[in-house]
Image (cartoon, rainbow, N blue to C red; front, side, top):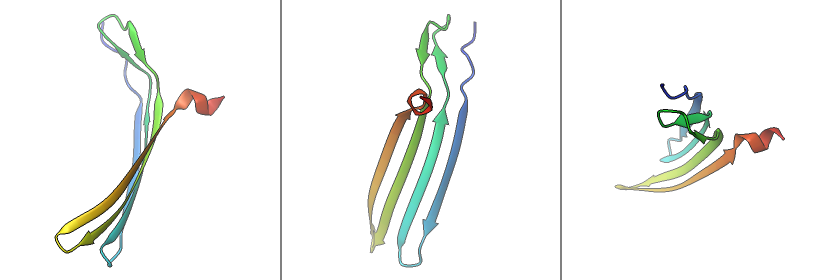
Length: 77
């Protein structure tokens, strides 16, 4: 028996200013997953939001990245 299909959606954007600074935002939805041949194990759905702020300086890039993971089931209650 094959594992169940995973629902997945991704959205992202990046803006780069001429002054060598950039901002990136993204969001991803991952649906329920069943693993193992007999679908005995379930991985719950989740919603992931990410963001990044970066500055290019000479040959270097300084960046700060944030990642937030939410249990999608909690958001509906």
